[in-house]
Image (cartoon, rainbow, N blue to C red; front, side):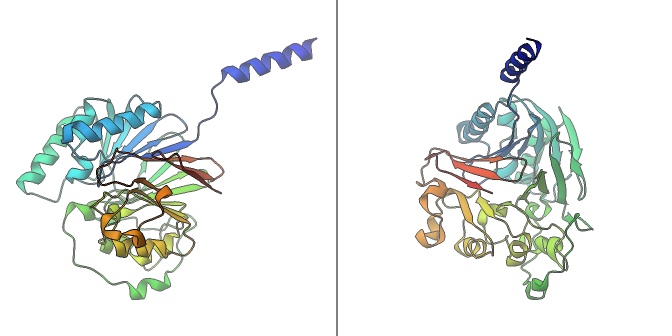
Length: 334
């Protein structure tokens, strides 16, 4: 009887214990900005940027809705990639809805216009109420259950290749520099998120010339599974050298209907060897049918949209699944 009783007790305990969580990422539609909610299997959360302010609290409401869906009641780490309105503007409104524990950024702004200072001051007023973490390349953001490595910050990049990287890039000789970017975009905090065998790259709005330091003369990153397309798909980022070095399986573009999704950038990504799919938050009006993905891969087809998003679930073996909240279309990648 004892073995039978033990078996019954073990089955009962298994039903009581919660199922093991996977890594979940919510790409939230903030219409041409960024708000990416990362929920570790440990339950800790990191929000990368907050979208815009204004719009009757539209973006804060959408972030709060995604957090509720994920079972998140606070933001453990708020990572602000840089101080532009479509990335940091929503902080005051979000702070009204969710507690924010740690504020992560690259330090002082390089922009000194009155508008820029107003934006930064609004952010720092809330940052000063929490814990401030100023990161530099090579740092790790200490989220339990994940490895979040800072690759770029304050205009600088990691000095040494990550483990397994360091291969010479033969395409560097053809890298064509663009005009120097003195804005906050070039200061973006870029991170590599690793969970088991899965790797996701988010470089914020890091611009073209700054990408060179990550892949030339050697590839310091290695390959990734998912590339959150830099700068919303604007053609000031996503050089062929970067894309061909990291070789993503999937690209996820947080573009708006009329912001980002540039046809030439979309084509560079589309033509990257090994890429399987491009998922988009919006149909890019400028791209037409030729430079947009098929409808199932686009969260919002109409310019006046309902704020639909894309959900990523990652298993520890490296397999992952994306789901379009508009039509419930999902696809799994081994």
